[in-house]
Length: 120
Ligand code: SF4
Ligand code: SF4
Image (cartoon, rainbow, N blue to C red):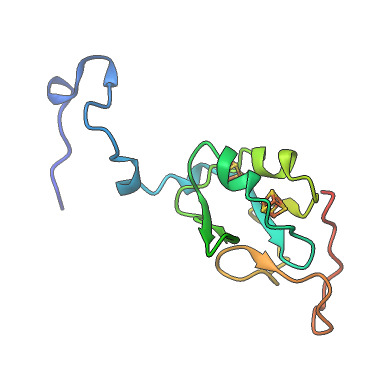
């Protein structure tokens, strides 16, 4: 096991001196609520991608492709600003498991067994 630095070895004030190192720390464990996106009603405006303070939203080929749950803190800014109201925030302990590993689900799928509350 790697040795943890003692307090005398830490930067004064706990400052982060090395820019861009946040990717190395899986801080998603801080989250109480997790976002999920209904891809049937998402209009691909990418406002969530622009405004997420932790850059936790995947965008590929100009489409919103779900969440980086290793780093999403569950702040709900994406859900608040989404003009299509297609992002819901659910408790981490919520058993609704129809979303994929990136938090995407399809509310209009005939195979869906859950009722989607996208206003939540
Ligand atoms: S803000 Fe809402 S509608 Fe726009 S890309 Fe994100 S999830 Fe889709
Ligand atoms: S809940 Fe907050 S941190 Fe997570 S994806 Fe949305 S805006 Fe980003």
